[in-house]
Image (tube, rainbow over all chains, first blue to last red; front, side):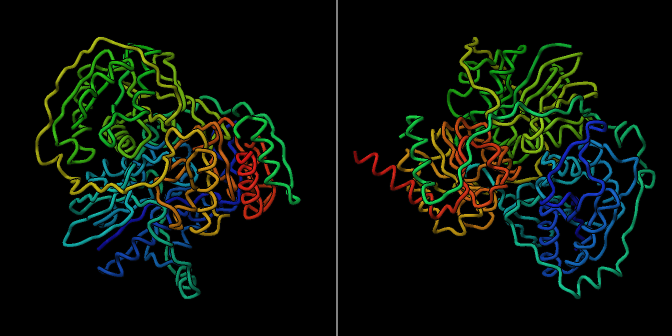
Length: 259
Length: 322
């Protein structure tokens, strides 16, 4: 089966993300990047499915040139192919523009299943996968804690507020995976070496037939008006525990009449 | 632009969800609030919506909306939107809400704003406030596409207030056709939760990666019991399998606003902060003095949770014993 994983390469978890007040976008250039853990889980799930059913995993990502490092780690995990939409024309896209780009890139590959994380770990909107599914004309089967593919059918355990639903759809389909679904494998040396030889296909917006009315800042339906800081919480007190930490908390709670 | 604001009403566990009522309250403050209620709903659901500000309720109790996800509801909402053209439609930032907004925003080519903390009608569109990046930023956004503006609203952004409206219900026909019956719910499984729930708890004691394992949550449970509260956890602790998802506080878990939040072994990732940072009093215990959680804490103890928490438990017991 042909599996396409859509995932982001994002500033590493050790980087404190800042927003550039002039562009109103996150500072992405020049900071350390890594494959989004949500994308790594999606790649892992794809690899497990192809190990069971045959086929190959293709990673598709949209991002700046710094994204290459994350694409290489997906290839080192075992993804067979990668597509990178690398074009200043797509910078500043909103969720809808991003989904149009990714859907157009997916359509250039044969696919039975598209896997995305439920949301990226930097912007968290969580609506791009459902938008992609709409543009592909396939069902979006979301928030999977477990994925089973059998006889052209996808069955998942879907996270709910109070348990889970067993949800089924026919392939081709799009599924989103929750963060706890698996433990992504670490790339091994052999995989890392092999990844260096794999080709990363580069697309521009024009290659995908998308113009400035659809993608990039000019095509965005959502416009960020202002970027600001919320009112600061009044600084509290910090105490280094020297054997009295628990007592200090108890005193504090007593002052508040909580205990 | 009209001031008609629609709210997509959600039912979970045979109850109208609290965020539905929160959204209705805000919608009725800003304009004329109406609700859409699709799928099986408990008795008195429409009355409840009217009580919190819905001047009209469009309703279909058809099972198709419960048995098949997203597509039937999207079809119905899109048809009704075309007919009545509301200025704004609000959805809960929930599992179902996100699926619906994703599909609708693509179908209408309208885009959407996610993670909305508040909004106003302005300049013929909507201006939404978004607590971005774990609320370390507060941005405003608008939608420039024509037609109804779609917003995904964060839970606990508004207080639900009674605003009684005369009950006015219009039954709408359910959609048919196999093309919409593609995402089939075969079974619903409820996982029994033990102990007090996070929702409505006055005190929450949460644990993160620093707890190191499932067994150590017993200590937090003891502390929570003494405070009459509930136990929460970070996504890392849930992903590690130490505690169930129902206990997860954060962007992808529950948003909570207790009087007291005690964060134990939690560094304060964006993911977690966005779910708890509006708590009234925050106390945190962490080994790392640089942990971001301290910036949001009224009292921060730099120390070992395995020393500090047991001592705190003993102190509370002593005080209670008096």
